[in-house]
Amino acid sequence: MRIEESSSELLSFNSISTQVLSNISIEQYKELNTEFKTNKNNELLNRMILRLLIKKVVPAGINRPLHLIISKIIDEFMFDELEFALWTIYLENISWKRAKNCNEDILRFAAFKAKLELDNAEPYFTHLSQKYPNFKLRYQKWTQKNKNIFAASISDMNNKFKELTAIADLDKELEAINFAFFSEYIMRPPEFNFEDEAESNEDIENRSGFDFQSCSAKKYIKINDEIEESVDLTSFRRSSSIEGSTSSSEDNDSELLYRNSHLDWDHSVSKKDNF
Image (tube, rainbow, N blue to C red):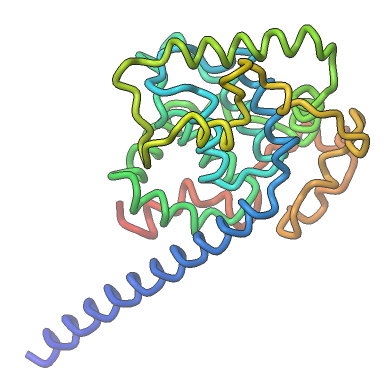
């Protein structure tokens, strides 16, 4: 009888401890998100978003304007420039023809994988598990089916960063950008509603940079004299970067982005959480 009571108390304690840790992770996520939205490099990230749209990496068929979904995911995962570059590589490697449709789940799974490679994923996982039902199981199934898309080196990311941020022929590029934004806006479904809140055109302009009056995305593309095409991505990494990541990109061509502490998550999470 005493043993049964002890076991019950232990289970109760473990349940409380798990809940406390979960609450801590959620609070940590909220603090990080507030800090990110205050300090993020909108200009550079916006340029990268537009390049992703122009390249048409992600096919049509998603149920909301793609540029708004991408902006939402960037805010949700608090992407920096390197993480965005890695995410783009994953999206380019996905065999979209095999996918029945493009949905936010695929974009979010790839985004979480990129975050997992380059940052502490625990606060994000807690947030995602609370917000999206069965996220862990669906994410694990997706990564198992798409193992071949995750190989990327520091050099690959550096090249992708340069590609997404390069200042090219702005006149031709702006024409393509304006067309992409205008097409997305006029082709949105009649039942279109934002997931979180109803927004006016003015609200959307403030969040996306799209000018509904002139159908212009010019304010998204600004030449920043401080950003050169030869920028090395190692200068963008946060203090939590992998030790030794400052070595030359040539030395890292064969190095996959599996980090010591955080990249075991894919394999250990099912054991840890018995999912």
